Image 1: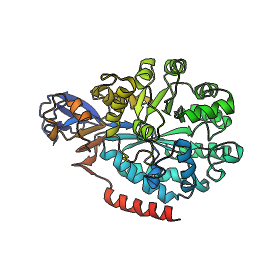
Image 2 (image 1 turned 45 degrees about the vertical axis):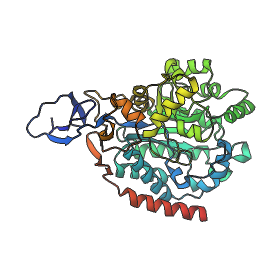
Image 3 (image 1 turned 120 degrees about the horizontal axis):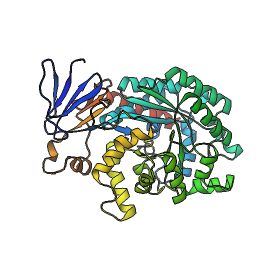
Image 4 (image 1 turned 180 degrees about the vertical axis):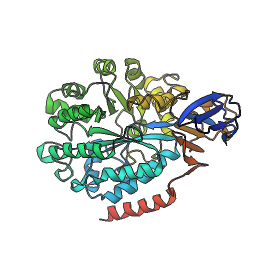
Length: 432
């Protein structure tokens, strides 16, 4: 065993010992010669947060289309996104992943479905940014092949040819999937931007490689109406027909799901990425989180893009999820603080098919967030204090025992400089 790293003095759960990238002890840890010690007196340690749905490139269009529903929002932004360069995407990914790390996220899923001019080196750029920041990346090779001229929502110039998408997906898998720090996911975008053929062939491709599947589903009433008009069936029915109901699938949003559909998804172990702030910003609806969990669906948290959740951090989604569930059900115990911490950690890991992250347990990977607790001493329960107290950024963040955020600063990135570069790029994009 290599030299231990010991987090000492945390209010919750006490000391934590790490060696060889794993948690090897918790509670009261006796000192050993050679220990490296990080003092966490009064702080709160949790498993690192898991972001199950994001669109990093949307940092380029933050704060736009603020009074639109989903379809209107997309129609306004598609043409702008079509002008993005690979360097723009990398700059947005660097800021987005840096902000996620600073707000406690150790694993992030990025659903990237826009490939302007067919240049799939955008995926190399996202991976490069993740390596610089140091957090785990679930890279969803998203895609759209149904443009306006064929009945889809996106303009034709931002969609791709199906064969080109599938070939690119194979290439992205070969270039980047390592199953450790980078996991490639196969992820056609949504029912109103893809063909049935792409959905079916994408599922076949993913399962040949043993990879997971991801898409948007049941986000809005308008999506339901589109599916009924185009297919004569609801989105979950189409999902089943395409072979997309299984424990290797998770869905973004999952708001408008009927009871029988929920039972079908739950019995198969299909997960849902709950994006409460984005859902509220877009007036899409309130996800039935407690019902989904009771039905057997893994539920995780998602920031979604920063064009629909301008905060861009994951921490606040825990509180927003708690408040949304209580408002929807009119029950003050619909979700409790410990529940939303579980959703933001272990629930997210289950959505992503990861069984060794997301929990504070001996033997798990040491993906850990250390939250400042100095101002929370008057709140008795640590997790209640964390979730219901003021928003906070992490004091320290570890991924597999490696430091990613130290004393509140992202170790591998000048985040302030990255923000300045992104702001200038965004200005030039809109001026164009």
